[in-house]
Amino acid sequence: MQKSTSITPNPPTQTLLTATEREFSQTFIRDFRSPHARQKEGEGWKTYYHTIPDEFVKKHLNGDFWLGTKACWYPNAYNLDVDSPTRAVVQQIKATFEKYGIQESQLLHVTSPSYKTTGNFRVYFRLEYAGKLPTFKLGSGVLNRVFSNIEIYPQKRRKDRLPFGRDSHIIADDILLKNLSWEEQLHFFNKLDPIDIDAFPRIATIINPSQPTATPVSPVGNVAALMLNGLEKLGTRYEAQYQILNFLWRKNWIPGDAARHVKNWIRTKNNGFSDKVNKSAWRTINAEIDRQVESIWARTALSDTPNNLTSKITASDLLEAARLFPGDAVNQKRYISLVAYYRPRSHHDFVFVPYHVWYTIAEKNQYQHFVNKLEQLGVLEANRQYQVGKFSRRFRLQLPRGDNKAIMQDGRNVTDYYDALKAHFANDPRLIAEAMKLNRMTIWRHLRKNPAL
Image 1 (cartoon, rainbow, N blue to C red):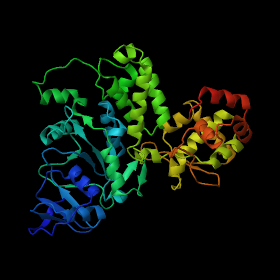
Image 2 (cartoon, helix red, strand yellow; image 1 turned 135 degrees about the vertical axis):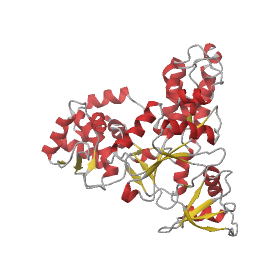
Image 3 (cartoon, rainbow, N blue to C red; image 1 turned 60 degrees about the vertical axis):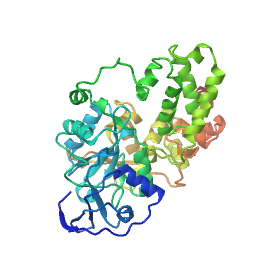
C-alpha cells in the first residue's frame, strides 16, 4: 500500500453494524484500533488516528472506499500480496505450499483492485498454534522465513487493504467469481481449514527451541492420515468420525454417502482402539454417526468451497455424448469430463485446458488421440498460436444447444459421467441404454456395482 497523503483527526458518528458486518470486523480488524486509512478510487490514502468507526466498515463493504489497517496482536487472517505475478512466481508459491502439505481447502485466492490490468492478487489463509491463534510475532516470523521474497500482510508498520470490498473477488480454478456477495466471500474464508505452524517443522523448532518433543502420533486434525491409517489411540473414535465427516461435508458429499463411508471406515480402520467396536456395539456407533451427519449437514445450505461452482453437466451434454460416440462408453465418459470442466469457462473465446486436466479426462498416452477425434468430429478447435513458457494451448468446444440447467443431486452439481446418467435417468438401465446407445447389461452391471449416487 502507498503512504497516506493527508490526515483527518475527527471521527465520524458511530453506526450500528449488522451481525455479518460485525463478524467481518471481528475476523479482519479484531482488536486493532488506530491508526487506519481509507482510499477512494483514483485518490491517495488518508490516515485517521481514532478508533475505526462502524461507518468505515460499512462503506468498505459497500464499495464506497477501501479501508486499511495494521496488524493486531492476534491476527485471524494472513495473506501473500502477489504483485505483477509471473508464471515462475505463481509456481513457486504453489510448490512452497505443496512442500509443507498445505491443501487448497486452506487457501483463498482473492483479486486486488488492479487485477484487471496487472493480475495482482492475494492468497488468504489462517494460522493456528497449539489449537489457538498465534501471536503476530510468531505467525509473521514463520511466514517471512518461508516466503522470503513475497510481501506478507498484515504488518506492524504498513497498512493492509482489507478484503471483500470494491473489486475484491474470489478466484477459483482460474474463474473470477464476480457474482459472490461479500457475505458469501466471508463465509468461504471462515470455512478455511487453519494452517498449523507445525506444518513448517524446522522453522517452528527454531522459534520454540524449548518446546518438548511429543511422541509422533498423527493428530485427529490430519484427516488425510487419519483416513489412511485409521485410529491410533483409545478415546479418539468419536472425534475422528466427526473430523472425517466434517472433511466430507467440505468436499460437498451427500449426507447418506458420507455416513456410509464413515461407517465402513470405522469397521475397517478402528485398529482395536475403540471399546465400543471391541464390544461390537455397532447399533450405537451407527446411531452416533447418523446424529453427527445430521448435525454437520444442517449447518448451512451454502456449498463449502467456491471450487464446487467450477464443474457442470447438463442433459443436453449427455445426449450430445451419445450422438458423437454411440455405444462407446469410454469416449462418452471422456467427453462428459471435458464438458464438465469447459462449461463454467465457456464465456471465454478459447479456454485453457491444462495437461493435468487432460490426464484426468484420458490417459496420458491417449488424450491426444481423443483431442484429434473431437477435431475430426468438428466440435473442438485448438488455438495453434501458443508459445511454450509464455502462454499455453487453448481450445474452443462447440457445446450442444439446449437447456443450460445443471444436473443436480441434493442441490449439488453432478460432475461424473455415471452419476449424471443415474441422476438424469432415475437409475433406470433401460432408459440409459436406449438414450446413450449402450449395452443394457453393461449399464446394469455398473449400477449394481455402484448403487448409491
